[in-house]
Length: 242
Image 1 (cartoon, rainbow, N blue to C red):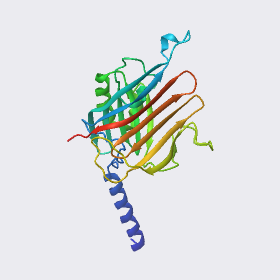
Image 2 (image 1 turned 90 degrees about the horizontal axis):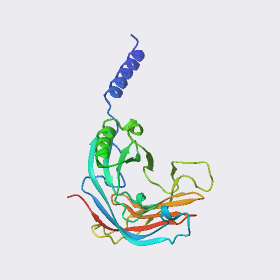
Image 3 (image 1 turned 180 degrees about the vertical axis):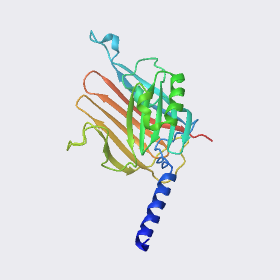
Image 4 (image 1 turned 90 degrees about the vertical axis):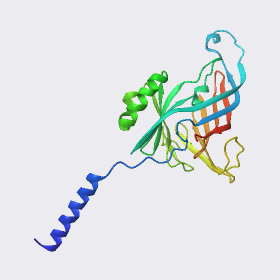
């Protein structure tokens, strides 16, 4: 056998061996820390039009609110991380008095963070085990799912919608990334972290998130441009699992 051909065959065999032996790459670090026991407390204001009063001329229900998000359970595999989360802040849109926090799965897989809704804690627990076994088939396990983030977050990045519009509307977009000093109970970082401002803007509504990697969502805003539903809450306390 000619030396050049022999070398090529050896390289090919090595490549096959390496590819065959590769495991899936570990997920990128989630900007929302997904360890069991992590807990976020938000405070702010909500205004909403109650569904049963739309036929008349209803007063707008407005209140100050304290809202808690918590990681109830978490699992890892070589290529994914998933967590049962109670009280993700987007539940506050169209809030009704007395509403209890619901459940969802946050799945960190393939440089993306997905949100999968669950009807209750029992279903969320079953979904958690299903998605960690086969994260690539997550959509078959959920009633609804949403691509929250594409990582890494960088200013101007877009995903999850119409990416051709020049105005950046009808998709998620990182509108800015700036260092900001934070005063949040339980967060001890002295230097100003980078705060990423994410927005999904449409004609009928808009949603904004401010997020800090390793801390999570620090500010959540939702506003409907017709029938009143607005949310503006900020993170006031973070309890990290010890």
